[in-house]
Length: 78
Image (tube, rainbow, N blue to C red; front, side, top):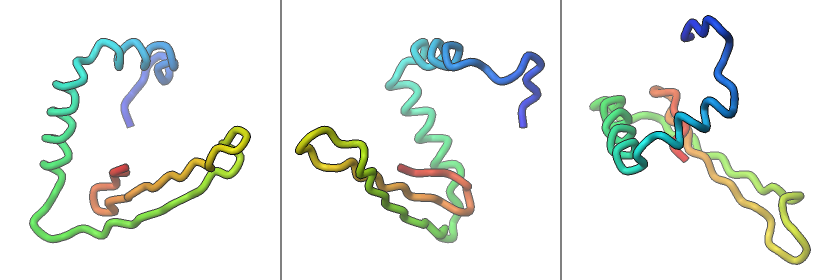
């Protein structure tokens, strides 16, 4: 864990940081970082899907969410 001397950053602080980033450059750096996490041998990727039935309005379809968890890297892929 990082030593946050004044506590964890607020929502507003995190939003300011994210808004200051160049999206294309952030994407390039993030992809490079994730690729460095990969190892030669395959990892176990667990898939999980959920349907949020109460997230719809009127006749709209419910919200479906799928996540992929790379266990060795401890990283949610989507």
